[in-house]
Image 1 (cartoon, rainbow, N blue to C red):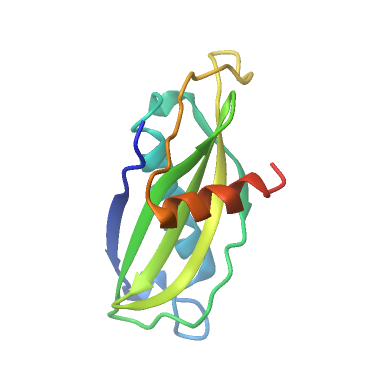
Image 2: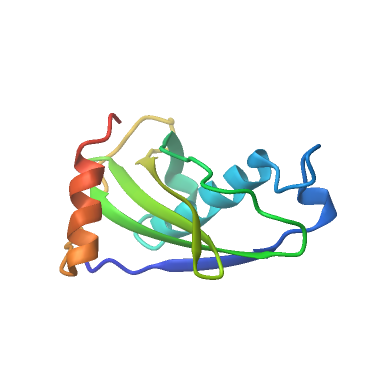
Length: 138
């Protein structure tokens, strides 16, 4: 299957701020994981998806009240039972966070089950992301 991005946007409101008056990392993490989940749900049923590991979620700069954040998530690698998403958060043209999340496909008993998804990276950018994802500790 081709790599297809999912995009979400959020307006940073007062309720999203930390004690410094900037975007609370916990809220950003929620949106980060949610975007990756939506990307994974394009391939496997949402009720089967669990988050296993968040990799390299590092803020490059603070996000201010009133800014609109854009998350772009895409599944870049499929294992036997896992899917790895790359998620990038931007404000305008500025990249704020770029990281990966490993999701696992589970059955009703909560145990991992094969999903039979194959991801084909064809664009140079996606091939590079796929190579980065292969190096992650899952």
